[in-house]
Length: 504
Image 1: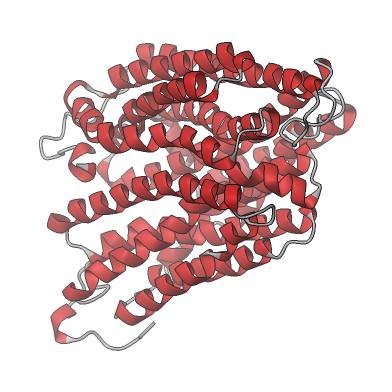
Image 2 (image 1 turned 120 degrees about the vertical axis):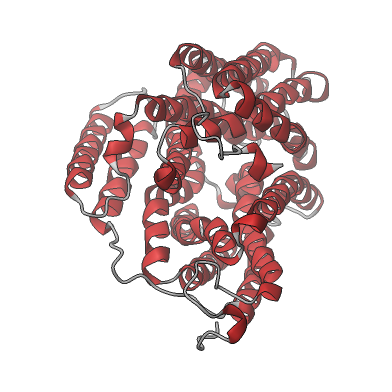
């Protein structure tokens, strides 16, 4: 990355001097490419988990932590990562995040044991915590306001395309490439990350640091410790009861750590999660709804592929088709949902979307025993796609509209962290529910593993029905909360064009 004095075409002290105007499209490309690393990994890992378990002889608990190790460090440190970018320079920290993510990805590709893979995934999450906040921040720094909305729209559309193609490409590779092909899911990050770094280093001309900005390292450490202990307490029921003395001890320690986190945040001069935001009832409600919706969404995303691949024996490429409706409907309906949220407020869209999601998850629960993937599961997943398309942008509208304009960046970051925490807790908690259900139904192995025993399929279907039903109930609760919440956008600001103006 070049560090030279500002040339004439970017002279001055304005905020849009990261690069020359002709370099902006390259910065946008680097941001899209780096964001794609995380999107591809997230969608492909869920499809690849049965193969990983078979290759590494991993238990269900270890499979949970292959996912959770990444989500733990990312959700705990993403706000710290954003602050570090402001403190030391957006481009430098973004580049560091890409580099760490790529190095950890190579370690994942070479993992000889489940434990090694879990550790490498945790380091991947740390890299992503520096990388993810930087992508949109770099675009905002590179583009002036009159061009920024279009640039963010291109970034969002590219994210939708990446999310759609990731499972399909991964499914093809895993279906036809052999049992060890999952390793290439991680190895592909080396050339992609290298290209993003090359583009970034060649185009960034100024990357000012803000030495006066503080970084809440104690908050990040306590958040990681607290969430990790709670997730560990919720995990581990693969062969036993949901609750035991050790789980209670871990859970108590996790709650104590989170209590210490709140104490630190209340006194920190630079808190990673400003507690005063939660004094706003609308902001709090919007985040509660976000937590329930993404808890349900993460449950289905994680465990549906394990149920149909390991329990039903369908191929990875077939399983990837379950993700296609999500990307299609979000890409085609999110703009409309955003405009409707700007006009009518987010609450009606949140109610409608939550009810559609509840309907889709209820359908999944009812059809689990049929083992009819194309005739039952895929249509139900279409409802999930429509429901998520209805809620994603209105949730952003509700979060942004609940705070003053100068706090929208922080509010968006907190909401991002909340949705990722929802994924972390859902994978841990629902994994234990699934394991107990599978055992109670007389399964002859472990949920999500390859096993042709009839008892395995029946027990897997019972667990499938259970986690889908719980997801449906949580979405119904979200609908009720949204109905009576009164959450709204920011109609009092006549110059605010709303979220739809960004994503359309």
